[in-house]
Length: 604
Image (cartoon, rainbow, N blue to C red; front, side, top):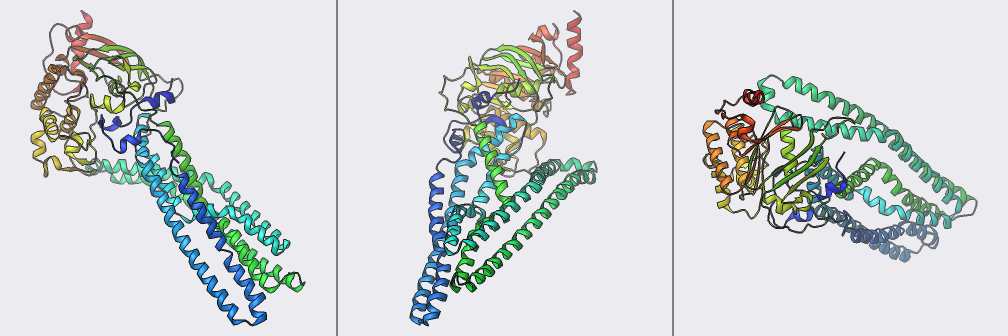
């Protein structure tokens, strides 16, 4: 059973990586409110169409000028007529150039407006896609492709294309034979474009996919540069990346070669067509069916009729890519739309009720076993529950489902009786603190990371959260204290990231805390401080869910859940699960420390 579109629309958007959102206006507000991707753009498109009409009308200045020169000025030897015609033509062409500049600037403005309207929503859709296993910034990349195309000459050619029939009709009035020759040439050029796409479409798509995959691989290797250098893996990693890159280059080279062949044939054919127009025109003049001026006028009009088609063929690859990117972007925005704005419910107390929860891994094969199997349990407000179990038991997946970082395949997660999709995302985000197993800090200052990037964050609350996580002193030891920038290349130890992540979870005194291995990188002193912070949270009636391999940490909770193969094997008080004798704190060597205690309990 897979998540439905209704389930997707009902989830909140901003906590997939930060663990929470804030109640505030800003780009996230527009990001989660549905609106058509083309909303507000249609009027601008109409304006560009008006400019295009004026431009194409002024393109007739040159053929009319040549017609008057050869058929009126030269036979009459009228210098005055030549001067006036030349001045009118120059002014008209100057006006044409100005309109062309304005249209190009207007197209850039449309691209910027589209970017400003959709950038935050595309960013949100990229983050939400992480819950479906993509982990890619495809919507943002597609938006960049569309924006680049709107500012290109190929986009302008789309507006010039509807005026091609007008120029063909003018050729018919000059002479029907010239019109038929131009129509035949246009059909052949369209056929060449279709053959190019047929021969090259799959190669271009495949090359784009391979380059995206190669970039993702390179980024993954770069993030683990220390391991690569320490273990002599640089050459092997380079070869592993190089194989994919070489395949991408091979496919792209073939694609470019096909484009070059068809592009060259199209250009050569267009020049031959222009030559044919001149030759046919001269033949018709010799037959007395045309004047000499009509030869040049017909040649210019024919060139104007073919120019948009020629530009589209030359930029066919970019046009097709932009069309595909636009369709993907629209689908992503519709799929990850936040739906209608939610009604703010009463502030949550922290009662979590799980019913028949099921979760399948993303892209799981048909018939695969679920990661989470029909879980049902209830945790009261202010209660502390430890979740233990062997590796691959589904503990971290369950944590992600409880905070909404992953979508369930079946069943429900309710907070205070309301399903997660019923809550306003920002409201419920304030009430949840989440620490993932692998703590990831975002580019920005330490203070911004702790405050969950709240632009109206209170410094006192930031420092309070850091002190609760025993992170205040280590933050002050950094170069710029709380204003220290954490970039993609910033190096922080596992313990430092852990404590800053804990501070982020504690920020704002959330009613629900879900901590996945909060003591994984802490020494005995840090673990004692963590126990004290959790004790303070319990006194404040905060509901705690702690995934841990530390017996002492688990024993401090009200109840313990033993998870195995995605199902609950035991769930009760720590005394019932561990036995009457509480285990002493163990060294940090994983779940094996629980085994003797649980086995002893099972034998009694």
